[in-house]
Image (cartoon, rainbow, N blue to C red):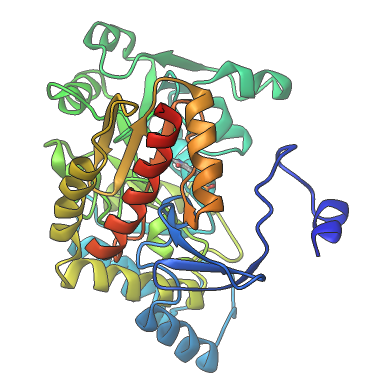
Length: 393
Ligand SMILES: Cc1ncc(COP(=O)(O)O)c(C=O)c1O
């Protein structure tokens, strides 16, 4: 299998971890050698309810038995998609009311950027340095990391970068700006939270010049920071919120949500301003609704903040210089990329899955399923501390 993986499956890096998966359940992933791995990563913040959550599995199976794909997005009334969009509206502040469902995070970002251009009649998009919004052309155009972009230029013109949390840069937002797009908590940059009311200041500036604020909640959203959406922690409601990853509970999804008036722009002049074959797929929508209900209707979000405190308490160590982030979106920083690499690779040898962040090589990613137990957290943190102790000696 390993040989076929390298021979036939296109690769993203020279050194994939290449663990061969047998199955996964709860907070554990099992390889084909019968080793169990405690999952501190959740498929990079995607498996909100862990692996094979019974309610998600049931929703998928029930829907598969009824119907799968029947028509392109938006033409037929398909209950799972309608129920999902309604549930999002009921749990999202005004004026965010209508949701457009797509297949991935980056596709939702594309839709949000198009909507902002269409609604304002402007083309300038402002994003943040070290931002990550996905890997298609539009999303890559607003990525704040030149090293990864340069080989693919020319990208979408009219994009500008500002520094996250730097209020002086708000002067860059003018009446030429269609939208400012920010991650509510910067992910790839190192799990950097907005400080000193930064997001509401950006929103106020956008309002003053007629620009829209798009918040990318693809990673912080769906309960991961103790609220359904991360922006609820920072007293700021965006014009467009983009979600993905954890919304699908392990299935592929993306969504962007805005006011009814804004969304109306996509349906006329020209009509079909954004279309997709599989967006709103009934099986995926059923899985997402089951996931959302579990996150909203149980104590999971409150527990997320308790788990954050537990992890921060357990991971006190001379080689951990800082723990950034909120809830179960945490990054433990070591003094160097070398130490971080050693920790992540050795953790896998010892049955713990940790991972890197895109642009902060000193960070150890801890984005476990929201359903992880305190006992599992204790076991995982002990593995990390034991490894750090060995490195320190
Ligand atoms: C903040 C953020 N935006 C967008 C994306 C892109 O989502 P997808 O990989 O589903 O296209 C990601 C994925 O890592 C992300 O973390």
